[in-house]
Amino acid sequence: MKNLVKLLAKNIKKIILFGSILSIGGKNKLETLIFLCVILSILKLSSSYKFVDIFDKFFKNDKKDELDLLQPNEQPETSTNVNKIKNNIKQICKKNVISTNPYYNDKHLLDKQYNDEIKNHDFVLNINQSTCAMPIFNLRTFKDINFHFNFLLHNFDTKKINNLIMCKDIHKWMTTSSLSDEDLSDELAPLYYIKKQDDITEVFEYLKIFIHSNNDGTKNAFVQKGIDYLVIDKDINELIEKNLIKDLLLEKHYNSYNLSVHDDVYDFLDRFLSLVLIPEQLIGEQIHLDIANYYENKKTYEYNFNTINSDINMFNTCI
Image 1 (cartoon, rainbow, N blue to C red):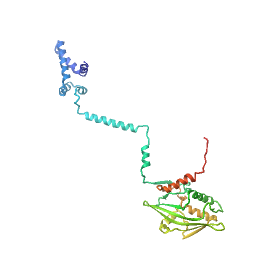
Image 2 (tube, rainbow, N blue to C red):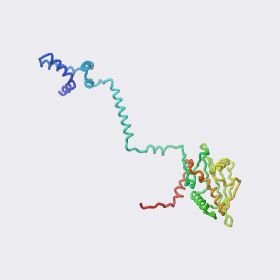
Image 3 (cartoon, rainbow, N blue to C red):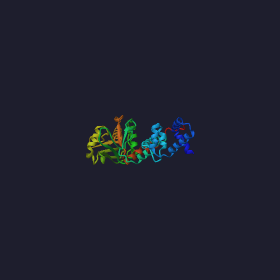
Image 4 (cartoon, helix red, strand yellow):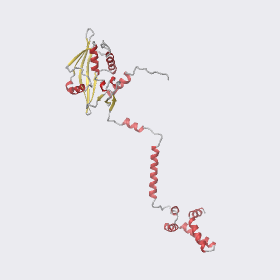
């Protein structure tokens, strides 16, 4: 019964039309009813698409009625296109959900940054007044030279270097000054020159410095060329000519400084520390550091965290 009602609902237009035609031709209602039932039976039992299609074309029925009368194993020719459209809609919806997701994190990006082997180890440092007072422990280069360089002061730890920088700044304004054994002890102190070019790093002995105190307490520093000086002579002269470092030899084979006399103390410290300090005439420019080397980076951390900041207790507040 339900199926009959459903069939009547779906074919209501056809039934009304058939009924209208039959009512015009005859007065016998019983015959009309029997004829309508026969037509409904034919519509229900018929499995021929062409048969229904003839009526659809003739009566201009909706496409929806045609789809309802098709067998389950029959599909319209446009079903493939419909499925494609549905799939495209699903993909668009998925993309929109991802892009508009209010919660997002950089976990995968950070994982990549921590685990990828980065080949570019260049760090750009802007030169200002503060950076000129900070020793550089990394290989470095400037815009007008084609190699990285560094100078290492023999067994001078970060605290000793920092103390000599403070001595230089203090003695600059004093008329009399000298260096104690705590500032600079008697020893042989080789100065090393490190050069990196075309991914090849080499270490050379640049200078030898003999620090000695006489019986009267006078301290002297005697400077002479190192064993590799002739190999690096061209590089050293280029750095001196471009005022990136100062010449401890004063263009001589050797030179000496009286570290008990003010002028010699300041001159020695100024030239000696120019090997690790950025010259002030470069303020406003940039220096490029190669931060790939662990040994150099460790000294930088040692200086920044354990030397200049170890005893700072400024800006204590209860706010």
